[in-house]
Length: 363
Image (tube, rainbow, N blue to C red; front, side, top):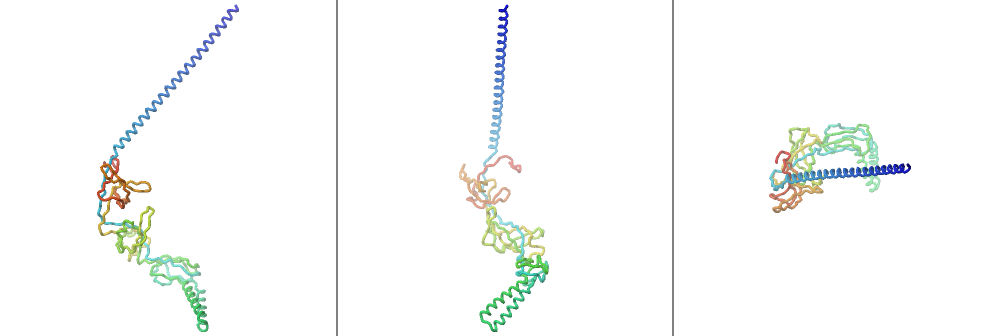
């Protein structure tokens, strides 16, 4: 009886051990299956990525090939054009002369003899300042000089004459006068006001002649001469052309922010219309009577590099070009004027452009 019990226990133990081993084998097999599925998914993802990359690469190569096919080599010639030089002008007019009338003495204003808009003559009194102290000093010096001339020494007389001149000048400083014939444009003084020496109290302008400074490009200066006529138009006077002339050409020029040399040429308008006031802006032209030759290049052939340096490719052989540095002025309509550069009429320039339709619908 005891042996049968032990035998049953052994069989039960063996069965449990067999079941446990079976479960372990099952778990191992499931893990291997999951790993295999993961490897398969990873492989599929890699294959899909490789396919997308290959497709994208083919698309980019196709686009590049299409772009290369659309870009074409273009040859254009340097052209020579003969024209009449017309120089555009702009600016504003100024009075012929301006006096910022200032008292040269300190004190209270005793009189204002003009009002805004009055016409005045050279030397005319505009305003006066209290001169009591100056009159007293002048009279004292005169008395001393008379006494010295009767009984003083020559050196004393000379010294008093200098004092007399100084006193007369100080008295003169109490009177404000016009420096030229003109019109009172602005007044900032009333009788009784107190001013320091050097304070500006009114403005007198000479409107008999109007002037203007205009910037002329260094290239165009070869066509400018003294006395040359200019035609000006003003927005304030529609439909009217005002004639001016070149009245002054300075010896020195200046430079703009773009590094272009310019000369500030002065224009003069004699006997201007009354409706024309200082500060009015204008546009105009100066026309050179002779014929002028200039070289033209296509804007598309000009390349701009570092530092704003402009170059073109000049054809020197069947398949050879060389860069030529140039200085140009854009004229519009896709053309530029050649200002400087080792080129001549008939030289062939080479550039590349897209052969697709342009903005105007051409081919």
